[in-house]
Amino acid sequence: MPDTKNELQHILSDIQGALRQEQELFGNTLYTDPVPPQQKPDQNSMASRKKVPVVEEGVDLFGSAPPKTTAPQEQLLPYPSEPWVGAKNLDELKSMICTCVKCPLGTTRIKFVFGVGNPNADIVFVGEAPGADEDAQGEPFVGRAGQLLNKILDAIQFKRDEVYICNILKCRPPNNREPQSDEIDQCEPHLWKQLELLKPKIIVCLGRVAGQTLLRTTQSLGELRGKVHSYRGINLVVTYHPAALLRNPNWKKPTWEDVQWIRKMYDEMKTAEGSKPL
Image 1 (cartoon, one colour):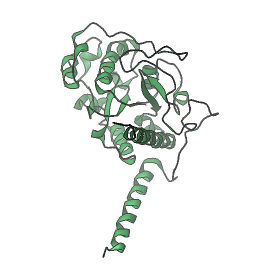
Image 2 (cartoon, rainbow, N blue to C red; image 1 turned 60 degrees about the horizontal axis):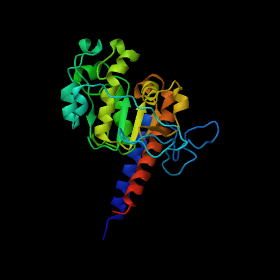
Image 3 (cartoon, one colour; image 1 turned 45 degrees about the vertical axis):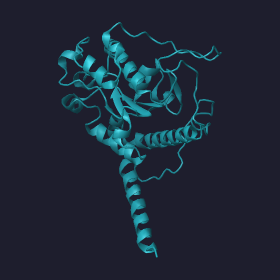
Image 4 (cartoon, rainbow, N blue to C red; image 1 turned 135 degrees about the vertical axis):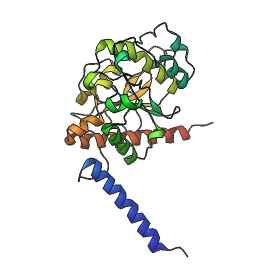
């Protein structure tokens, strides 16, 4: 006969642990079914959709364009004529670009910060650039912001090695300043190739700079949040950078809303995939 008392104690212990974790990350308010704030509902908002939406049609991931429609099409920039464009996997790509010195950051870095995680990940998190800890260790998001990102992932039942994490720039800008346009121009094609090889289903841009860069926009973070954008045929969403949460704890609540929704979108996507006929 099962010991229902011990089983109940285990369940209560798990619930208490989860609540403590959420309190540590996001404060004392419990958010059970968050909906990101919108000024008014529109067809692009997270709140107005139950299924995973795609805001606009674009080309398939680095592939052919779909039949012509009235929806705006993405203008894909061409790859440079360089050998790494032909890389067949992430390890090969890393080995071909890790000595890059096309911009001045290549001469000041300690270590090249390529990316880390599951090469078959459905979700890719993209930040703007490495910081001091990342530069020293050669791995993205390993400092205080990275530790917070790990806790956020854990809170929505993702392990760090289940997703993929990278940055737009692979080398640290001096004093952690924002990437400059010429640095992005030289380094972003490497990210295009990473994403081509990864083939993710969802891209999560961490912070304004990452969102503006990938979407080729000057919209604010507030305007970019709460919507599913299309990036080369991939669903893309934008939320706060973990470093911003360390500076301003008031942004933890909207971030928690975002990541809960991202988890829900992921689960619905996997459920839909599982229902497709073989």
